Image 1 (cartoon, one colour):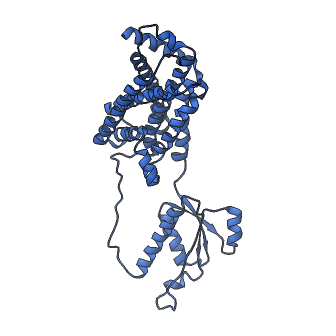
Image 2 (cartoon, rainbow, N blue to C red):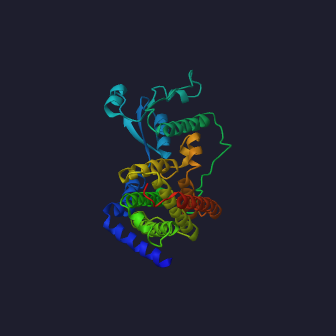
Length: 365
């Protein structure tokens, strides 16, 4: 049995290096994703939201208010001249948020004045994701001014600290998702492709004349995909460390999750290939499985951002537990959570392995 598995493994190695597309999806594709998302979320942006302010008051109090917005650390103020027609300005510059400080802003703070109220005008682009953040900051600064004017004291204060024990950035949280995604796409696409091509070319019919069994065949595919996946992970981590200084830990639990996920998706690919009649449709069928899981399992963004019904869908997708398990093991140092995800992935792998062996047939129908 070991000799048959080794012989089949060697043939898989030769096929891999003859396939440029396999090398691209295994090595180049995850690197491109890291560079793309790393440039977006870890690049030179200062993380501030632009707020265009037209100060019609131009007083000491309005200047203090603008300075308070600047001190929030999240707002980048862009001054708009008092004489500028704000409608034309918005039309010509397409700002996301515009704040107009009225001309009576200063007089509202004068004790004993007839009118001690003033109203800011905040104009927002409702399609922008930053609208709520800017609104919250402006309201917070306004409330602080109201409190100071009433000579009130802050009873409740807030101290903000990081949940993670170490300082991480977005790319540290992103890389485990890329590792999970690469494991899924590499194993499913390879297994579906080779199963459909072997079936069409009659290679399985020839294998039936050899001592090689379907279990040995699936074990070989899982072993080969493990080698490919760890080659890809090595490249991913090297790029992450070299370009972004990531500080992830590939501990034994993370390694076991990767091994189980490779077995799970290899078996899933074998089951999927069972229902593919033509090799030309293999890629489409694999995309139908991997594409929804890619976006619904928290690979690129937290599940908390999704509607509740989509979060319910995510709970039945295997990739969700692989993402969670790898992040718990590699980022959060949450051993209990990582082991829980590992158990779920291991059980799913065993179930899919049995089903994959049961449904796969080498006979030409």
